[in-house]
Length: 97
Image 1 (cartoon, one colour):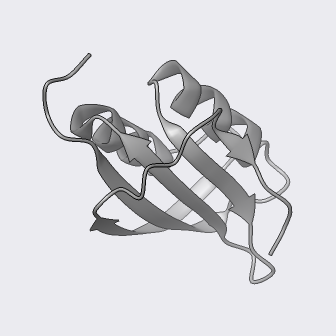
Image 2 (tube, rainbow, N blue to C red):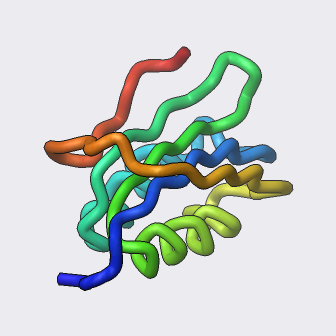
Image 3 (cartoon, helix red, strand yellow):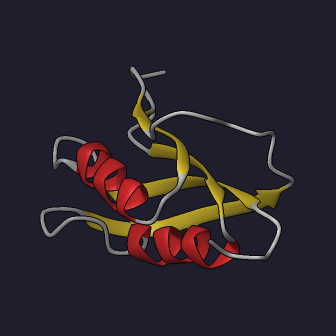
């Protein structure tokens, strides 16, 4: 476990990112990295991701999101960082918002 304080990132992923298993693949990647948080489709066609955990793991998920799964075409990832709020439990796939 990292000695660094946890961090939080909020991502909006633009491109062809819905209907290409982006959410499920993000969930698997986040779980493999030991992150907590969630992913969901947005009605505007983007995918939204919130993750918390070790800074290196958060960064790794953000780098992964720039490519996504093989069937995705990511055009742009918007990232904002903030203090974690203490999310717990498994990384979840949430309903479209």
